[in-house]
Length: 198
Image (cartoon, rainbow, N blue to C red; front, side, top):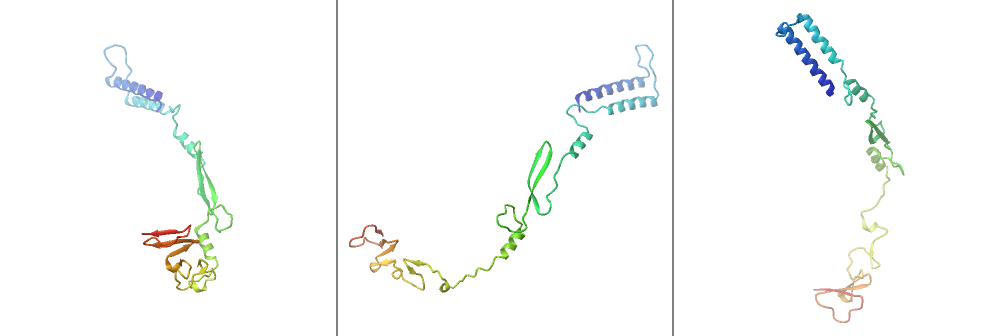
């Protein structure tokens, strides 16, 4: 409550208490002079008039009345939820006014769309992809893999694939000889060769 309003209420309460005491004592005493006497009805009317006067005081300054608050709330622009086929992309607030930006949701998968797509549209699009065929039979492949220009088919040895030469003492990988033996190979190892040994 406003400080001024509180002070005014306290003063009125003190005046009412003094008035009631005066009525109860029948005139105060000691000082001489006449004292007005009041009936209960008159006393009640005095209290009621003071209460009515207090009720007329309105808060001031930074305090708002119930009516002020209700009007302010009713004046806010609150965006509803997004309509069917859209979603709330962002929400913002400026001076108490709330606004929402909605964005379209695509119900079909289209080329170049920047909008999100419903899961139903994605499912339908995946169902409409034509069958790609394919095979699990290696012999039916039209483009079989190869090593050293030797096509992989059936059971082939490393020598058949050109991986091992010179009686199996080295492998050839990208035209580089890789010797694999526990001891260093005998004879001359050509330049650019690799020996892997124990």
